[in-house]
Image (cartoon, rainbow, N blue to C red):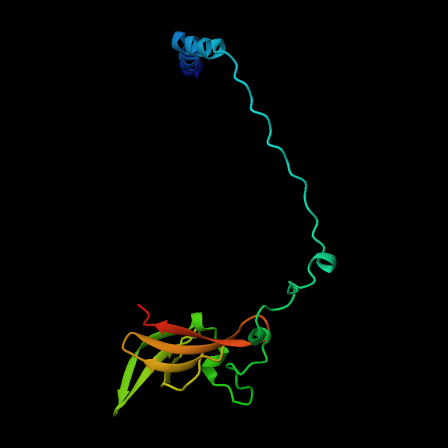
Amino acid sequence: MSASLTIRQCLVLALAVMTLSACGGSDDLDQYINGIKARPGGRIPPLPEITPYEVFSYIADAQGLRSPFRPDTPQASGRGSGPRPDVERSREYLESFPLDTLGMVGTLYIGETMYGLVQTADGLIHRVIPGNYMGQNDGRITQISESEIDLVEIISDGIGGYIERDAAVGLSD
């Protein structure tokens, strides 16, 4: 056991000597550092002048301007004749799922009618046709093709009104 301990100690000592010999000074590095130190110092440009902030008083200075806290168009007040969700309509089952959790898995022809097959997150497959609703934004199905189901959703515009937005559920892989 003492012989193997001595061999280990010799190996550790040899490794330490080789590591320390690699840390020796380098003439190229010393020359580079001395060359950098010998360069003349540069002048630092002055800081740019800071202009003082000008206070704007909406009460005194904006007599004829629109208030920044009101919509800039009269139609954007949300009271226009734009699209509105039908609150009296009874909800369909697929409207309880977010649109991004629904996936199209195929189509089905029964007679002349083409149905879209939609799979929910719980694994159930449902048949849909144009005119059905799905998704949580009053998404009405407008068209079904072999590769996707097109919808028109009614979403809030953020200022009390609603806008229509096109959406689609594509065929899953």
